[in-house]
Length: 375
Image 1 (cartoon, rainbow, N blue to C red):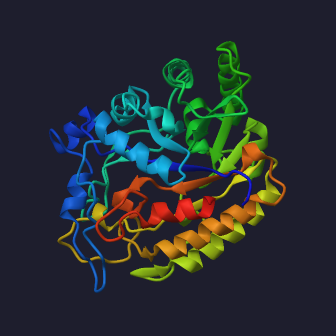
Image 2: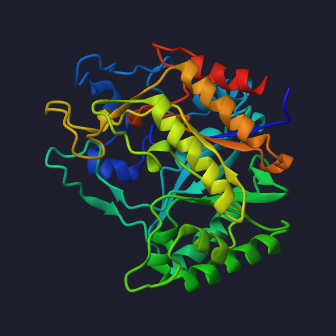
């Protein structure tokens, strides 16, 4: 038996009512509507994917309690909530504040936040002309950022269920460059993050564990320095780096179906390169699958024109288990216990075809693969 591995699954909280969604899609809308309407888009395409537990409201504590039990029983140690905070406040937080926070068994699992600071565009579904409207810009002002820091410290970091590494609250940032856009450059980001750390220490923690999701990092207009993400991670003093999903590092080359094992091999090589290049630990990501077709208009031809009209990735529980085993062996190589972490895409990215939650086709097979890896 190997030393303890921490498995942290990303949790996408768009399966409950939110007032912002109501403004765009109507009262009561959530992404279950897209799953109900999904249809096969090409020969052999397995849609719709139907959740074993039905189309439940994740903001209901009883519903969340079943998710927590299933996760804990199968070796998932933490949910990393995709967490949204814009200049006008939070979005999609009821799954956490009403569902998770009020679940009677919430002490069985930890939770952390990944600030999903990307532009929120209307791709629910993507319009037929592929021109999606920008609803909420991801770049924020310094005033917003400081307000957000105070909020997460008081509302989340102090929660007994919050995920700590070496006693430090884990906080991940999805798009580093987007933060720099809003704050006015990398120097301003470094200053803001240092203030954030100071606020966390003042709240009684030894420090902040700051994680960067590495993908799509690019220079700001007019900049000639910081030519690679490694420099940015060093400048901003991140404590660790990870990934969100495999397709960020390996294109899906075959349409309409790309091979899981090929994409995994490219990501496995990415793990090795990243571990050598970065000055901080890289937490390997294992992705369960990919099928973003539910986010497309179901009545138009399915052609390869870019997200979400793009290739799918074939997957099986056995392929997923083998990828997990490789990630475990990757972490066996000299890692201290606190950094033996695997991130998984995802607990419930149903409309992107990457979810651990049981469905009618596979039951608990993907969760059982995690339990087998940790046995």
